[in-house]
Length: 97
Image 1: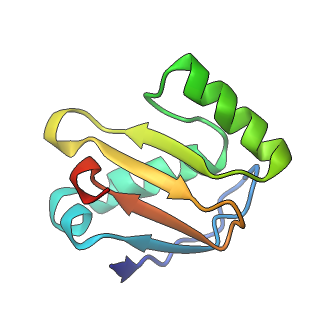
Image 2 (image 1 turned 60 degrees about the vertical axis):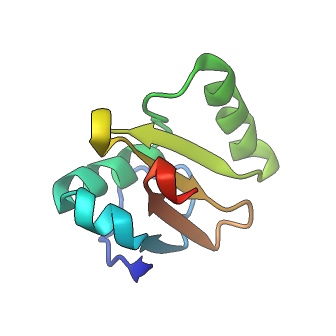
Image 3 (image 1 turned 90 degrees about the vertical axis):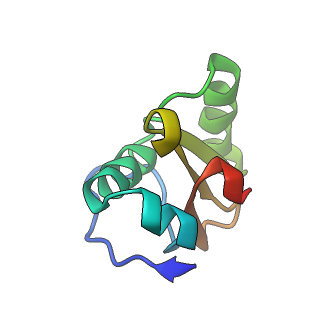
């Protein structure tokens, strides 16, 4: 995994902690897509997840559970997961899970 250096995200609803990206995601994704995904994730825009998962994320903002978002399309679909303790956020491909 690689550590990602990001600038402050305005209007973030939670802390991302240390942001890392898997090796596979590094090769498949471009920096603008990752940056935009991280911005959306931190702002509570969960991307392409179903309504039940979105509701779980909204609850997780209150109870401190893990957060997960999905962005991109086709072979460039990627996930962003922030751990429950908000110590780290991982950008990964579904095949990395």
